[in-house]
Length: 138
Image 1 (cartoon, rainbow, N blue to C red):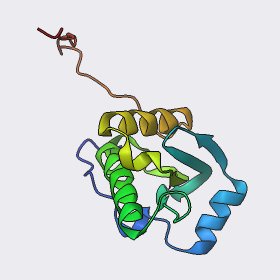
Image 2 (image 1 turned 60 degrees about the vertical axis):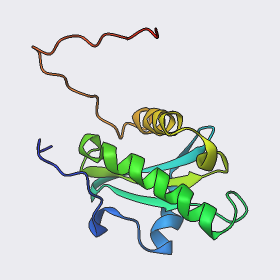
Image 3 (image 1 turned 90 degrees about the horizontal axis):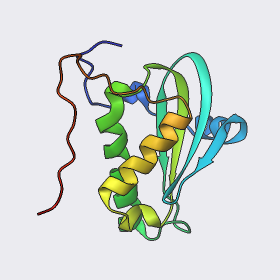
């Protein structure tokens, strides 16, 4: 994976047809979190692609659905350099909790689900980096 890989999901990295979504749903493995459902289909040799779903019944009206999809897309976009370029088709299905959950909680849940699917590489710190120190509130 190149070190300068940009945080951008291009058209080539998006699931675009209903046939692709149906294939992931039918043959993929589902992993449930409190705020979203991740369905992962290993696709060796194919570019990693993402799709995002927020249904009216599961999330709400158009504004809420768009907000939920935007939040989930942004979390994936920021982690894009750590996601393998090839090998996975992933559908992220939002639930109502994706609207109200704090960003940190939603991001950590999605990271946990991606890591358990094997679709998130660990963070590599330089060997000379100082250890992270937890700050205590004053």
